[in-house]
Length: 312
Image (tube, rainbow, N blue to C red; front, side, top):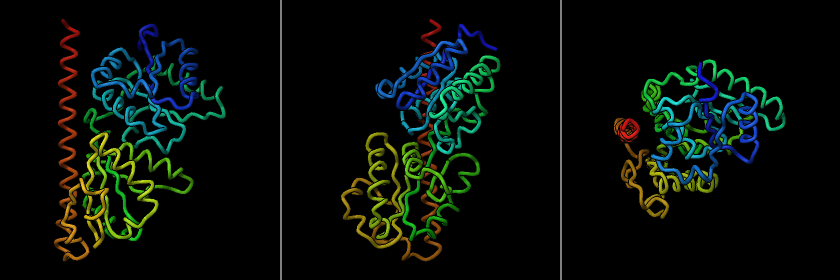
């Protein structure tokens, strides 16, 4: 149990007023200090500022409804620092599966009083049992750096399925979380879920073909944010050329090296060569994971430096 006068709740990622009011009201009723960090403030935070914020935070309440990359980064650092964490969202399907070990709360803007009461109960539970809000994470900080988004045309589903077979061992041991639109279920808000999946991805595998390039949905809804994330956040893009197409003449892809030579698309290869190429994609993904591990080690170094300063 922790003392309420020492418990500071920091809420991040609130959208359009309601979640901020919700957490503030619940914290007030539970008589726990509350601190709200707006999305605008979050965008200006560097890693050192995130660490300092979390060093004074007893519980991080993170709203993942919008797939804000800044929220994802704060969550990653919080997990690395073992800061207690609660995930909230307006839609339970949006909550990333790799955060399943943490307490989750889905709020309903149409029932504010009920939402406040339920959240207040969870905050009281945090004061009584803060250890329940730390999750069971075997490798601190790593899950959020390992999401892989696959973009493909429905005409190329057979190639997608074979690639998934090669990626499955990495999923099984928890190294990656692959997202494809086949995971969507009836009733899901598919547009928002695709946006969230793209925003959270550390890598995007593009299964390129004439059908892929001809798809209005892919070129208008998936490619723009994927390419923007590559430019802004360093998200790795891995194009796999399935069939003859104008990939090498498309200006969108001029900066990106394909897994295979565009003049030798996968469909022209024998079965053994195709399997080697799928395995090469899996190897590239593993290299990205190694890069993410280096990032975590850099974070550990920063944390050690901050702790040394605090002890002086």
